Image (tube, rainbow, N blue to C red; front, top):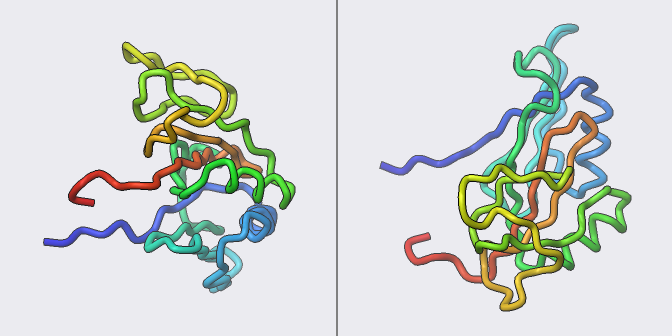
Length: 157
C-alpha cells in the first residue's frame, strides 16, 4: 500500500501576511479560495515537491506558529540560503550537526539534547555528507522550517 504525504496544514494568525511571506519564499501558489466569511483556503506547493502546505481561516485550531520541524530538502544548502536571503527572508547561518544526526533544534540555536551529538557546528558538513547540513527560518507566525542538504538519498528512498 502506498501512503503519500500530500498536505501539511500550517496554523497562521494573518492569512494575507502568510500568503505574502510564502510568495516571497518562492513556493507556487495553487489555490486561494474564500468560501465564506469564516473559511478561506490558501494552498502552496514548493518547487519539486509532491507535498503541499495549506493555511487559511477556519481551518485549524492549533496555535499560530506551532508547526515546527518542517523540512525543505535542497541539493545545496548554501545556495538555497543565499537565494532566500536575497528574497528578504531571515535565514540562519548554515550549520551541521556534531554527531551527524538528524538535527532537532531551531532558529534560536537551542537543541534538544537526547544524547551524543545535537550540537550545531558552523558551516556545512566538511564532507558535504547528505542529511547533516542545515539552515533554518520561520514564517511570520513562527512556524519553523529547516533546509536540509541531501545530494544522495539513502537506499530505498
